[in-house]
Length: 470
Ligand SMILES: [Zn+2]
Image 1: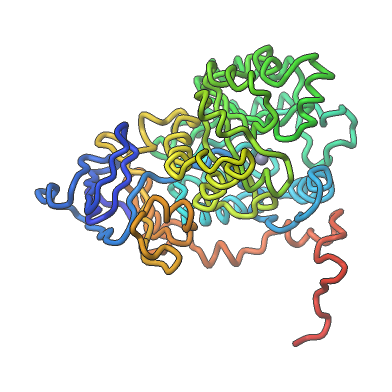
Image 2 (image 1 turned 90 degrees about the vertical axis):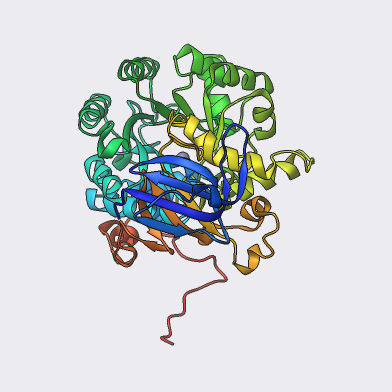
């Protein structure tokens, strides 16, 4: 729905402005794609908007920003639970993704975005688009869905940690020249397009899949284009061992030596940094995308988020993917980000509800380099705004909406979503994507599920699907 002027009124407005003001019975007035005025409802009476949205009993807040998303993994949700990371990748995830067609890539992106919009995410960083997923089709899907997205093309020139040819599933392997050429083409075609909502980034595959020369080349190209880059780093302790064995150093020195540090880098996970390395990340303003669900499910460890926040590392939050999370619900992710570190460092004071919200909004905007445009509700910023209902049983009484949002909430409570001043969901109904269609599409990869190397798909020994029709 395209509307020139919108008034959101009577809400509990979390502005996330520099003073972190909360406005009870507050209103936000929007013209075209921008926020014009924010204040008490009674103070914003002078407008004559085309659309009025009553936010009574709702939180009104900046849209959530997910800084680590695998769009292609929405379609393979549930394919690999309760297994080790190596099996997770080699037996399940890579095998399925390595059989994707461009249709699968587009369908998975739509499914993923439908879930993200429904649960309050307005912007995201897709970290790895393989050529076989169809970059162009995914960008078109983003344009149609109305979200704001950084789409990162996979860059690689090697096949894994050990350089062994069978390390990576063949369907996942790409050639460096083709990766770089496709990035150039997609950058020309899509960067800054769809009303400025789409950016094209570099998605460095991983340690062992990119050689030193290519790391440096990509860093140079990134700065030449004034775009950004992302890569998984320090997700597993083996990353530390690999870098020590191959480069004789630690993760941050490796990154510095390859020109990878800086505010234009988003490192996904960032678990296994030493304390002194956190200062290097803070000084270089390198971003960390913290993915608590994925880290817990794959037993990767605990990122040092309390310490990162203390020393000034820019931290944002990511849901990761369908088989590692297994949702793209940033409200649930905020909850985990606020909970798990308390237990890990045995201190209930670390990572407050407010800090979790800051990471999921402003932190994400910083990671995407768009904090001057989104991440808070302030006049002049783009209207990326969500409304979250507070009338659900698990949110009652709503005497402390901030606490309710982080500790009692889930994305199911999200009612309305705006991006760029355009309404993408109203009264829980998606307006840009056809939810039923998205749920019912049966793309090819599901058909090949049983014919790929995924023999153990299903249940553990004592659980079985009944063969008797009921
Ligand atoms: Zn990931």
